[in-house]
Image (cartoon, rainbow, N blue to C red; front, side, top):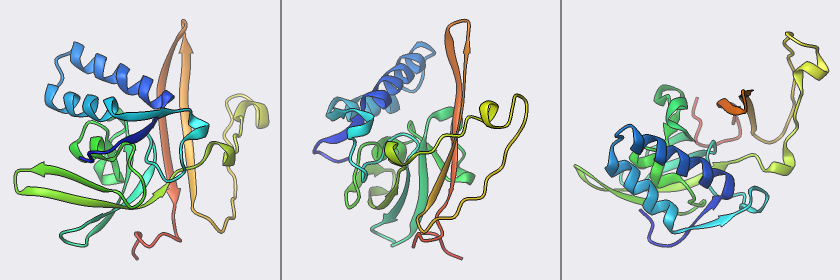
Length: 190
């Protein structure tokens, strides 16, 4: 992993520290949790609006290039419950996921695997900046219990987020799903 500093948002730090606590409480794999804690301990903590646009945060999607093989892959960094490698969503607790958090375009992630040292370059990051978001409040726009659809045209890649958070007796629960269309992305082939 990178020896220099990385960036992380206050919001991501709080959620990741809570994840570590929860996993330790149920006897989670301490090696992965220790690696994540080590990464977080050297992070420069910034507000969500102050994070540079070329930094991988939670729910960011990045194009990665294996420096040994030249192979490119696009992965989204997510919490363990949202991970689905078939959909390109990698858990923060996976070695590559822990390695991704806080890195910038052009950085190289290094980590030891059984076959030797693996080196992956962060080629491009697709993060929606907080100032470029448009929120549709479905109940207000369409009415309760109704669905809406939208047509969007853009010259830039589009990322769609679907937060599903609920307040039940004062406790927030839920998930945060996302997907995107990156037709301008050189990583997407075909």
